[in-house]
Image (cartoon, rainbow, N blue to C red; front, side, top):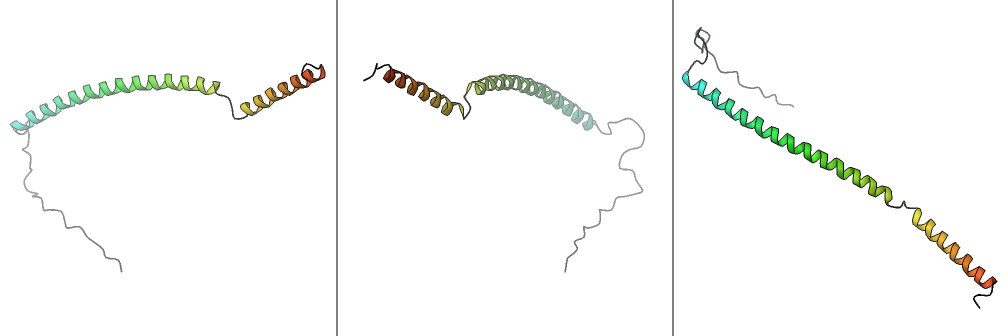
Length: 109
């Protein structure tokens, strides 16, 4: 059958004493202010880097839009699948009509 795995009970936490000192303003210890300051400094650097990434991403987006527009123009100039056979057939019909006219007027012997 199916085995049921149970997690161990959470560790006992003392209920009689608050782990943080009562009253007063943070930081609770002198190191916390230094850690928060370091985190804020790193956050400023992360925001600066994200702004740079955002700028580069927008320039890539603009470049891709230009490339897409050029590709649309190029694709519009490429003949469709039916145009080459129809053009060849039309050219062949004109050539056959010219040969027939030349034979009729006895230009070709």
